[in-house]
Amino acid sequence: MRLLFSAGIFGSVDLWAAYLDHAYPVVKPTDWEQQIAAMRANLTEPGRMNALQAMGRSAPKDAGACLADVHCPALIVAGSPHVQYPEQVADLLLPFLKQSAEA
View (cartoon, rainbow, N blue to C red):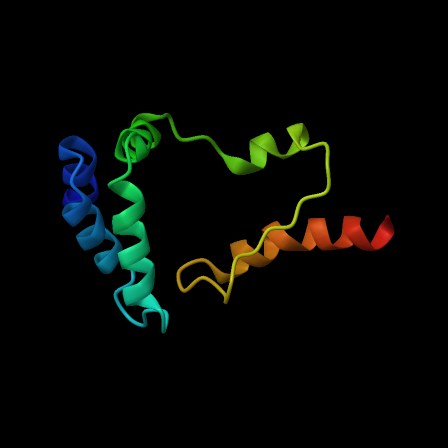
């Protein structure tokens, strides 16, 4: 949590990269180095780090509470089951898949 907080406060690309490295403690994607390089390039563009910092300062909202406001088809791609929350990922996807099948 300290890395995330520090990256937001200082607007440091290096601290953000360190946080991401910490967020993937077990198995990193095979293209991890390319993703990090692309992220570094992106966050050095004008305004990008400011946007990331603003996102970090925004109040967290429950995504489920906002679903009623979605009025168009949406595809959520979550990748492989989340290590910490596999059941919750399935719970999020199933209603959308059911709705798509009924349409």
